[in-house]
Image (cartoon, rainbow, N blue to C red; front, side, top):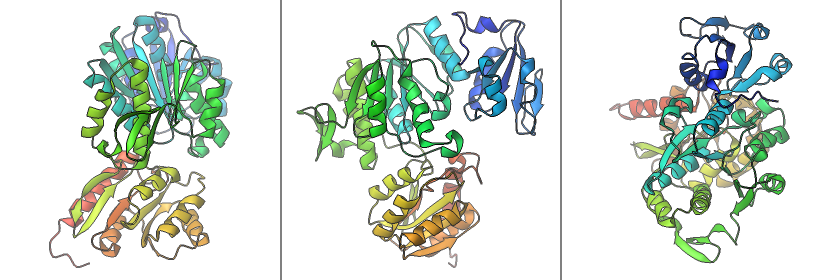
Length: 455
């Protein structure tokens, strides 16, 4: 059971020893608040022996970073840190910055929280909900996995705030708090190397509603069997979308039951999957009593987030798109459906996380994508799956992003698309997908803008 604290939660750390396990963004943000508590003793444990730590903390770095946990009263797990056996043995002392933030919100304000999770689409959906709320005049704060850290926004919370929190499975696996509105977009195979099984991954996602009450709301994709099972168990009011009696799209229109709302062509961000995201936003708006026109206004103006089917530019008659966010096969398949018939080359590969690339390989073969640029890591698994699927195009193996972009310029036919959408995580070569996408865009512009270059 994850640790909980009384209402004066931060003061509960007074004169106690606290170990932050993992010093990435979430724990860094919490550290800035924690260090202000009188008498608190802070330690930081990180496997990275070269991690840069603030002064005045006890450092536990390198392979034995978990060796001294028994010396601390409270252990704050960073989302990316798995429950290794050492952590499991100390589980009664373990909490997370996410858990503590929710407890802080409940203890200090009447603010409401909209929690958004899903294998794909949660960043876009969270952003659209946030923009919709701002358009409707609400005091909305966007936090969580999308970049802005929760504890960095803690001082901005008022009783009238609505906090839109993008939540990953890493954050949710031991989560025992509750959002007022939980949104579950989809559950596809992802992060199996971290969770162990698809069932464990789905169970982690399901924690977003596990502690909701009948006064809360769960909004879920009615076409996803895993989410339907979770909805059948929740105590919250369950509101499906992609259902003919509620929010759905059919043909050229969005509907609420039989009521026409607005045309699907008004959505600026490409891809049928983004229409599903808009349905979730519409369901949140209806739950909060926000007029549909605020959703309509936002989707007509929002052109997408960085690294999510982001148009980089046209160079030498090739359109380059950055979809670095696509860290699993389902996300890449969604991108391929968006650009079906237009793709001249596709960059695949990265950390081998045990994904089943079979459906993706068959789609690539069916679409007859001419060129696959194959990156290290999952390369051999992906290449073998493509061969088994009967892929007849060209596979170009590269060892860096620069080589990948160079291959795209060399191999992609004019008037087609060169797409970065790797179908797996980027951690083997890059810190995160943002760094991967930035490198792609940098090399596209650098190589594309060179004059008189022989290809």
